[in-house]
Length: 159
Image (cartoon, rainbow, N blue to C red; front, side, top):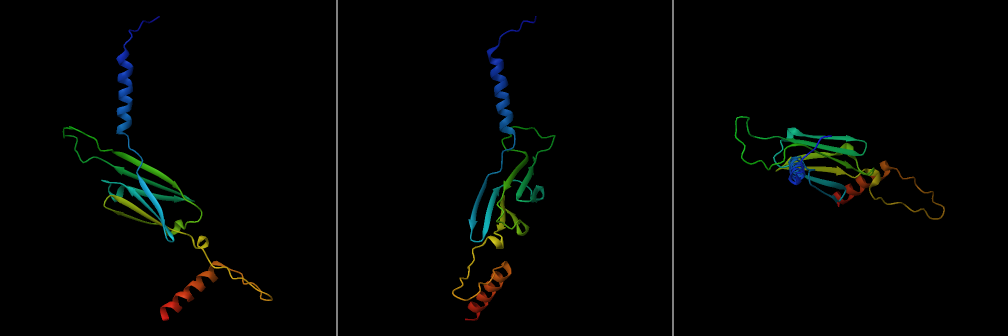
């Protein structure tokens, strides 16, 4: 049987160390997402991250973003204060089936990564013709809708 001395501060010290370690670990990157017309805009804050250290991958309807931020100091430098989060940051966004992830674009400027995801053509609102009497209703396809929109744009441009 081993006797241990009771030290109430030992548990407090251990808890404080765990909290300090958690605060040094990278946090999730904050984001803002909204719909703007026929596209979704996603802004992610990544200050101090080199664009070459940002990776975007798309698999089905899951968009994965990871970024790495290191330190500027050298090993020979004496550390006084280190409050900047470092390490690898990652985030996964589960996007709806109504988006065209094949046309996703990304831009990094001023520490903000901006992703633009257009709404898929099939998901956009469209007019449905109504047949009356003996008329045979016309089948709508995405090609017909696109052709009609192009014709409408040409008519308004020529007017």
